[in-house]
Amino acid sequence: MNFVKISVCPQIRTTSSKIVGFHHSTLYVAPARDEKTIEIYSVNAMIHDSWKRIVKIKTIHDSIEEFTLSPNGLFIYCLFVGTVEHDENFKIYIAKICTTTSALDLYPLNPASGDEFEQVYINNIGLHCGENGLYMYDRTIAMGPIKFWTIALLDETDSNFDEKSFIITPNHIPAHASTHECIRFPIALNLDNREVIKIANTDEILIFNGSTEEWISYFPESANQIDFGKIRTRGIREVYGRSGHRFNAVESKLSVFGRGDNLMAKISEKGMHIFYSFQINKENLTYKLVKRAQVYQMKDSFSYRLASTSGKIALVGRHNVVFIALQPLTLKEHSFLAIQKYFLSKTTGSRITEAELQSILQIKIKLI
Image (cartoon, rainbow, N blue to C red; front, side, top):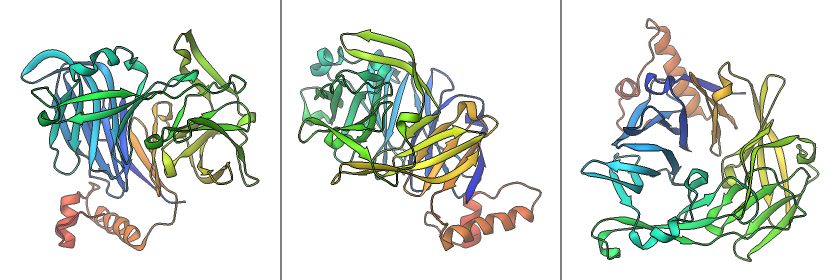
């Protein structure tokens, strides 16, 4: 199995961090360093010394920050509550950041959506960018309706507001039958169609179909390699209320991450992280989880985060990021790593930078 281990840059190493997104070979991470800035860094999975800061937003904000990356990797969206330069009033913002130019646009909540936002439990919200739009949903609900909103970013000409703003439109997902008792958090599959997965302690899973407005049962294929019914799961700090049954956390050796065609599952046992692709067959109403890779647990794996693309998994710890290849490396990737290894052996041990590689190879375009 091929993997690349890259040291976390000093700006992120001593703090907790959130994964913003993962596209092709580029991982985006946001460190939680202080309450006066929001920063986002990127690293290339094939270049050891490639950490760079994408954006720094000067803001006095609370600890609530949600991030998402567009499917094409061009834009990062950040939902936060705070002040920004030239405006000392606390507001709810969505920041839109271009990953190639670092251009920043700020969209405060439009007053027209003020009453609707009163229904948003912002500590429980997940932010998600699909092919067709931007969405918020309640990511902590275990049983009951799932709150869901479509987000529209408006320019000055799109509204009666004198600046850019955003509005939200509710389109909540109804509760499924109580006979399917879920402890796990909902899993976003395709929010353009409001497709959400619910897993219980059985081998049956439910997927909500936004086109037909119904929950549909899916059952494992014969090639499935994980039986959900045999994996112990326990909800921590339960909360019951009119909005549903939720947990602050879920304790289980199984975790699910990624989205859409890049959905993955991980089981941690016997000192190993074992990764499975989570494949859905909508025609046959079946699913299967197939083993793709495994690695030893890192020493700081108590604080790791996970992300996936079609070809790689990123396991982000406090001191290192491990990029695990899900398929054989291409000739270009093999050559690229060999060049870096060669020049590392010729130096005192310092890594070769992306700019130095471009100079050596005499190319100006993006390397990989």
